[in-house]
Each structure stands twice: as structure tokens, then as C-alpha cells.
Image 1 (cartoon, one colour):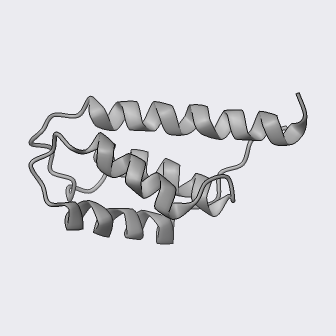
Image 2 (cartoon, rainbow, N blue to C red):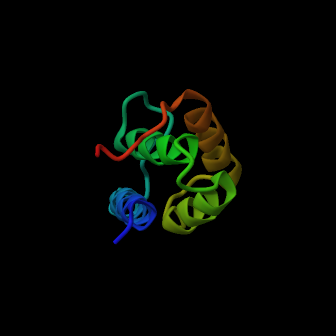
Length: 95
């Protein structure tokens, strides 16, 4: 396995883990409370975008699908995602 494939596999695993955490959150989760699990997952995934591993729009569609059980509007999720992408530090695989 070459370095690019390993990095891609790592990014996919990281995204899958964070999306799973979002799916497991209660439907009435308040995503605007600072430091909540939803925000931490968004920041980690945004770090993958900023690190060049994933596209922002592709991940957004996956996030929206994972949030379909929430009782919040899509625009609120989009807003939080934009904030996370602006604030996240790039994540990189330690090699």
C-alpha cells in the first residue's frame, strides 16, 4: 500500500468514526452549546478538509445525511459546518 492509499484509508476511517458519533447523538441535541460532541466531530472532519483529504461539499452531504434524525433545520447544520471549516486546524496522518 502506498502513502496516498494509506492516507485515504486513514481519512475514510476518521470520517466514518465521526459520522457514527453524530448518528448516535440524541435527536434533541443542541448543536449550539459550546464544546458539545457534535461540534467536536465537525471540527475533526473540517480538519480533514483543511488538510486536503476530503472536499468540503462531499463531507457536508455526508454530515447532513447523518443528521437526518435531528430536530434542527439544515441551514443550522450548514452554518456550524462553515464555522468548523473556518476554525479547524489541518489534520494530518502521523508518519
